[in-house]
Length: 100
Image 1 (tube, rainbow, N blue to C red):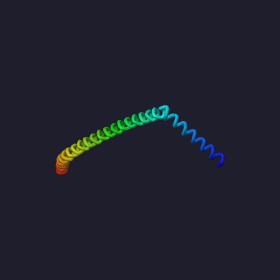
Image 2: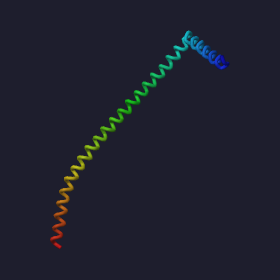
Image 3: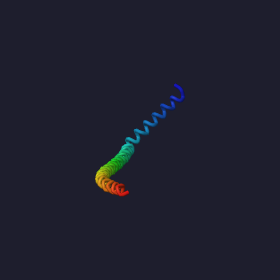
Image 4: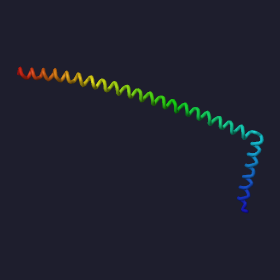
């Protein structure tokens, strides 16, 4: 066995012993609980942010639909008024042309 194999084996055995010692003392469990608590808190924060983004997107869509309805109604009214104005101006120009 090469020297580096021995040191890898010794290191692995030491790590296994350290982990077993931490498990028996309860530190490993406490650490796992702390990490899980942190992950759950991060998950809650991510869920809240996702909901905020979804709510804002829904608000933006509603505002865009509202603005589209307003724009369509204004265009419709302007088209109707423009037709009346064109008739009036055409009649005026034609009357001026007849006088000249």
